[in-house]
Image (cartoon, rainbow, N blue to C red; front, side):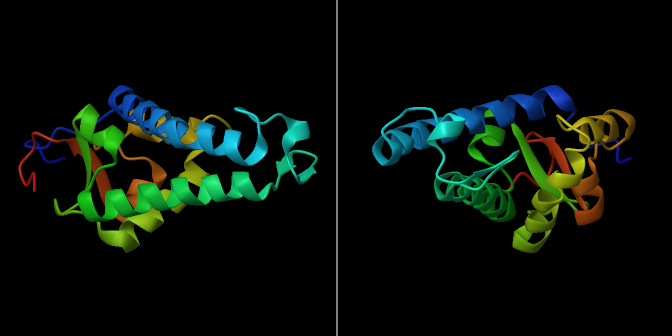
Length: 153
């Protein structure tokens, strides 16, 4: 573990995620109101619903937008709006901005970090790792650090 780097644990990450989700709400709720004439979709408001799987085009569009948001902002800038406000950023193990490929890999592996539910695996890995890395960070070669660390560009 590099002693000059301050790795980020659970609470700042959770704060950043909540801030990003609030930002999404500012867009998604009004869009849902315009498109579906409701503020929040219930199961009966979805166009396609197969058991536990909701395949409504609007919901899929929102998920794609969210994924692209995380990949692009973390890839090019090292932080989403939520991370920026929370004072944290994503960097490669070498301290650089991740780029699109590493950011894509890191974010697509949220599926694994989310297992079995509520991101339990990701939380356990963050809490038990010296560098506070979830599975996606380990595979992508990234880390989440406080913005005051060196190489703040």
